[in-house]
Length: 77
Image 1: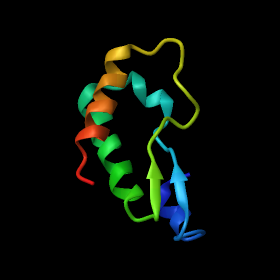
Image 2 (image 1 turned 90 degrees about the vertical axis):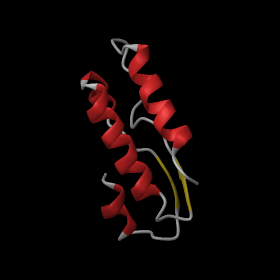
Image 3 (image 1 turned 90 degrees about the horizontal axis):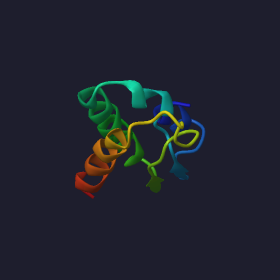
Image 4 (image 1 turned 45 degrees about the horizontal axis):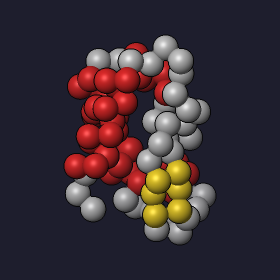
């Protein structure tokens, strides 16, 4: 579920998620853009734990995970 939609249900929650793991097949720029978008949505909650929606698919190139990790760790707190 999109975090902006979920905020209508529970704005005072701590949330976890929400990158679709099938986006790991996309190019690095798109992955970065989606990661930042989710981080921006997450800051509207009391707390946000970033992760993949359903784990890491076995076909994933580890470099895609590195793109995500770099974006998350460099995002301003």
